[in-house]
Amino acid sequence: MTGLRTLYPPIEPFEAGHLDVGDGHAIYWERVGTKGAKPAIFLHGGPGGGISPAHRRLFDPALYDVMLFDQRGCGRSTPHAELEANTTWHLVADIERLRQMMGVDKWLVFGGSWGSTLALAYGETHPGHVSEMVLRGIYTLTRAELDWYYQFGVSEMFPDKWERFLAPIPEAERGDMMAAYRRRLTSPDRAARIAAAKAWSLWEGETITLLPEPETSDRFGEDEFALAFARIENHFFVHGGWLEEGQLLRDAHRLKGIPGVIIHGRYDMPCPARYAWQLARAWTDADFFLVEGAGHAYSEPGILDRLIYATDRFAGKA
Image (cartoon, rainbow, N blue to C red; front, side, top):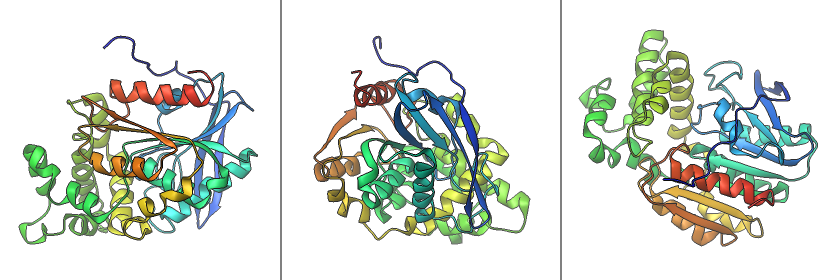
């Protein structure tokens, strides 16, 4: 696969810090690229996934001024793995605080997986502050999507990995896997929390790429990463993201006039392609790319190529 676009070279932030957002939370943020260039914000997945140095490299640093942040409770934000005052709408408010802190009126919003969910929630709430959107691995957080991944669906494609996901849960509780994991992830017993967190996280880490990618999945088995990732993700999903059923697709009309790019892998297991297709139908200002031979992860070559194409294009480069 020659000629595909890849990540820009490694880069360090030119500015970083913690922002007190209230409720006892302080979120870690950083800016990379060129101060005063085209403003953008990067929204990571999970929820609870945190940012990584590779995420900084999705934008041409000469053309962008990119804000990245660890959402409440994960990465370098504090307190670690905290569930209180941690909802979709708290995060939407945090994004607005960061925009005001950066001193920009509009910015490009980039989000993948749960980051696409959060981007849609933010964009539909504050469309006047969005210049463009780049969304990957669309997740609209409906009950059908949650059941597909955590109850029946992906289980049929990965029976070996599903068996490991089931293992910590007694048979009598398997009728609602998210609720069963919730009980263990909020247990006062730290060892029980860690064991459940690793099983939950590895289920995701090992099913997001079309072919096995240990460099992607290994991180999901690390204790501290897994604890924040599993606790926060499960917390959001048990509560349906504090969204009305079907809300994000229903309100996609609010994105009218905002240019966008939607990128989705044909064989994305966590996030079935039909929801990306539906979003593209509802939001006609966005270009839709269904990438063949790709799963869910942004690092897969065909997906990464389209993501770089999109950020280059919106900077006037492509």
